Length: 325
Image (cartoon, rainbow, N blue to C red; front, side, top):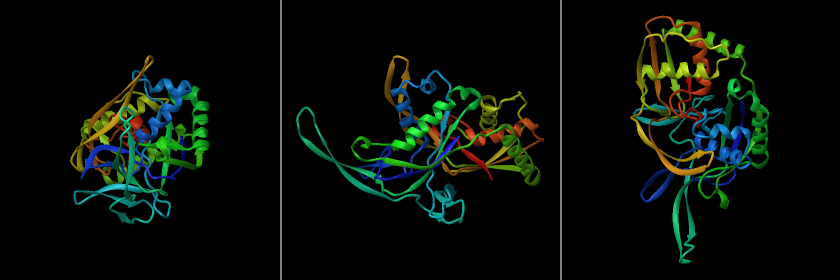
């Protein structure tokens, strides 16, 4: 796992695909999908072995997490739901903010190459100077042979920075990365976290999942259990199948919304851009999971892995990330 801090040294526009008062709107901070796309293009350009995992028919090996903004004290500004609105709370000092970053408007010009005429257009953009967490997880169970390549591409990013979003080729969306470090999550770390989760369930008779990124799909007990099992199946070195415990869920979340993303369908023969539309539960949702019976030990280990991987669809894009609180 690679972790660090990225800082935008220029304004950036990461389009949501929607407009407000005629203004193309931006995400307030880089989503995992934006970082995945930028890194993926570099891997494909040099024909790296890891690039094979970006082909549509292959399983993902790297999971890119949302670049959650950092508060002034270094804490994460985590999304949460309060009175039917999404707010952000510092994980260190507890301060609540309505917006994690400040947005402005930039005016850009473009030239019609056929007619030679120029026109101006407006974009919503996040102002420069914000810092965000950087987190990318390599699945060592399936991608151990690519570990050195993973480190090499991270060092390339550290040296050259990241370019994200619209007009990044013309000076916008430039990020630098600092304090990059690597950490190996071993089986003993997973089991240590599993014991903490087991004690938490014994103490409260329930577990609360706080989703810090969008969740793609319908948030039900079945999808949670399936996501936990899939995390174990893909990551756990000693995974053994188990029967799902019976659970009930209570949700505190915003209504599902449409999210749009630009997806390049990559095949061995090339690629084609297309707009993908998904229904997502916005980041900040909290789900209380109540168990009718005590789960087996392997369940807690899979749940610990799911905190790292995420659950639901598009986990390699940063979706479905949660922490048990």
